[in-house]
Length: 118
Image (cartoon, rainbow, N blue to C red; front, side, top):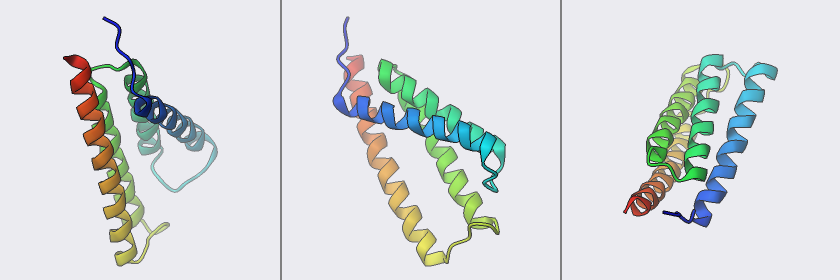
């Protein structure tokens, strides 16, 4: 059974591989003020998400949810930390935008993965 990968999955897979590469390089080169474990976790989950998207694996949505959890954890750590603190209204607007974006992307991924399984 040959599954055709949606164009959106190809674009997302390329974005996620770029995010993973940036996270891996950033965790070793740049002292970002974030915990390196969180940065590496971000890279690993982005890498697994990109692989799942590219190969149309059934576990893709779960990998994406893990990446989303790391994104939210990172945003929270940046706001609570003293290095990147934003004024609360700006942070809330940014957080709302990011959560809306990852929610819509998650809905798309889940829908396409479920369609490919049938």
